[in-house]
Image (cartoon, rainbow, N blue to C red; front, side, top):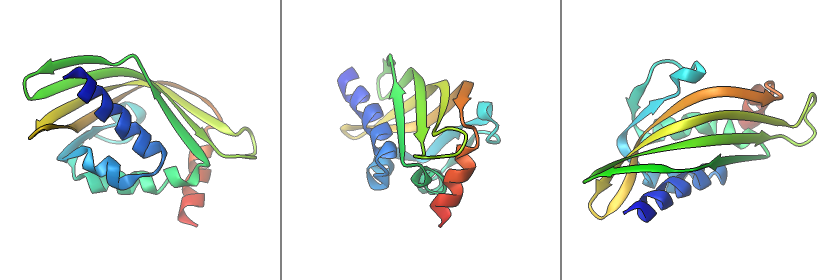
Length: 148
């Protein structure tokens, strides 16, 4: 049902933005197909959810806040699988950062979901990068802050 799929997608990105890693992991299948190749992150791969989240934990906690705004969600459901396409604007904020406090990434996601029992879970995420604005030095600063 589309409402359940919408809730899984929105809950996942909310969990990432609030650093609720256990919730994010519970909403993912193992393996999880991750593809950020359009952003220069190397080739797509099927990996364990903990690998995805551990990677994100090296940078995201270094931001004071992040906000992933998705919409509209275009859902195509086919039995026990679904595909969701959505535009995304991802704001990343560090208060008082030199050269600007916000780095924003624009693109779209193609998300795949699989039904496991009664629950929908994310089985893959392909990010299609469009452009970025703001302070592009913030990811490196966030990574050093997260490591400290």
